[in-house]
Image (cartoon, rainbow, N blue to C red; front, side):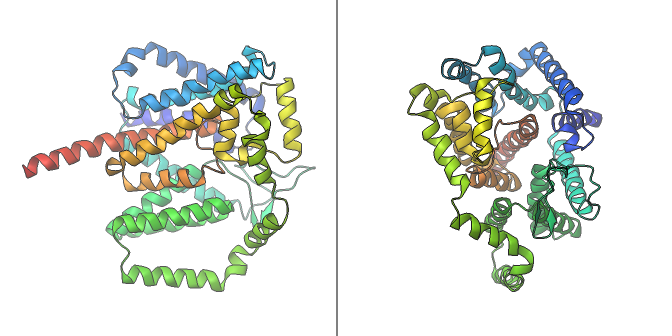
Amino acid sequence: MKYKILVVFLLLAVFTNGFSFVGWNPTSGGRFIQLVLYALMLYSVVNIKKINCYHTNLKPLLLCFMLIPFLSVIPALVIHGQDVSSSFYSTKKNLLYLMFFLPFLLKIKEEDMLKLFLYLGVAWCVVEIIQQFTFPKVWFAVRTATDEVEVEIRNGIYRYNTVGREFGLIMLFYSFVQYMKTRKRLFLFGFVLGLVGIYILATRQIMVASALCLLYGMFSLGKMKLSSFLGIAVVFTVIYLNMDVLFGEYIEKTTNDLTDDYVRFASYEFYGISYNEGNFLRILLGNGDPGRNTSYANEISKFEDYGLFRADVGIVGMYSLYGIVYVICVILFFAFCYHKRRYIDLYLKMYIVFMLVTSVMLWHFGYSYERISIMSCIFFLIDKSISRNKILQLKQRNLCV
């Protein structure tokens, strides 16, 4: 039944704080998130036999992403003196990976999940565009203006950091692939809309990584002909001639970052080497999630006052939290996708490449309810793509025999 996809939509709305709705109450909303998570856990336990019967491709890796973070409770206790209950409360967000199994239990079709992502991708891009003209009135934003803090403006763009870039990227890559195959205007519209949304996001690494993924997609489709090359040359010429207008502040900021003592590199060194002090337990299992109002949390807060954020250093931040064991799981995920690449749809391969390229700066695993809920649905799409294409290729081989 198509209405079942509404369950996924509602869960995404809850775990993303109403898609970063500015009217979301963090106190009552946070309690509701906990309640929904417990309900999802209960539903999974009740249906544990069905889950065990599903021979999904990604299940072993998803279980690792869900359970390995709880091993970090040990160093959090031994090294930082953080009690087990505080550590468990902060780490239990990883149990949201159970959301990966929900579409299987509800028998949601792959195409329905994809449509949901495309609709949300369009909505995210439209909201991003509209809110550039409504400032200071905004409806969806993580960064909003207060008496103490102003919204950052980069290259004339208000940076709201609205939740949903994953939807926009999936829509961008899917529209690109479909337009290159069909030349339909609808997909051209989706492609252009996605490009505008990513540009308005005003994050350099995401723009560069998206461009690389589009080039990868073009080569994978075998569309890099003379006409395509000339088209790309024209686009890059236009961009070059308007570099100051389109990317002036990005270039200036990058230059300043390189000439100054760039704090991101300091964060890499600190969380990747210095903070662990060579302790084997911290290297192996990490330091754990800081609990609320604990001495460990206060310690991390002091580091963040100096600009040292785990959130800024991607996989190094994951290593600092959950150790080398967790990083190995991340590497195994990319290795698995490479091994199964012939069975994964191109738009999803482009997104996986995006994850790989940006993993040194962005979190794609764990970190927050928002990230885990969205990624669980993307993992579902990858899993279904592998199963579907395996069957199709097997049928094609049988026909050739």
